Image (cartoon, protein in one colour):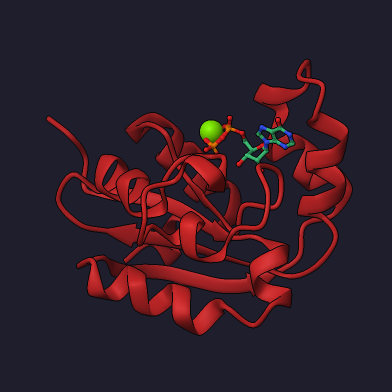
Length: 139
Ligand code: IDP
Ligand code: MG
């Protein structure tokens, strides 16, 4: 059975552009409850650790530099079928391929600077949520 939690980050491009409020409104309208949330900034080391799964990819250094370039919003969200429904809400990695009305279609500028992260599995939602929040914060 699908889990009911996912993890997200509003990425530095979208925070810089002033889109936190508009993106959170889309998330709320889609029926997600905020379990934990903070404005924070990743060091290059922490960004590298978060995206370690991509370290052999050609865009890894670019991704680490981008994700540590400014503040982000990290959040744990709750809803039935959270991981899949949130991936649908954010749209494809490449905003030119993202469905109309999705968060990436609305706010992303490129495949790298694509406004928002969403966990891709229940297991990764747990790992990524714990990376940013103490378990006791997940009420
Ligand atoms: P996802 O965020 O949709 O799950 P992944 O393939 O897991 O996409 O890639 C993680 C992140 O790496 C993307 O969200 C994007 O910021 C960045 N990225 C992915 N592909 C490219 C690329 O071809 N060039 C630059 N950055 C990329
Ligand atoms: Mg991914």
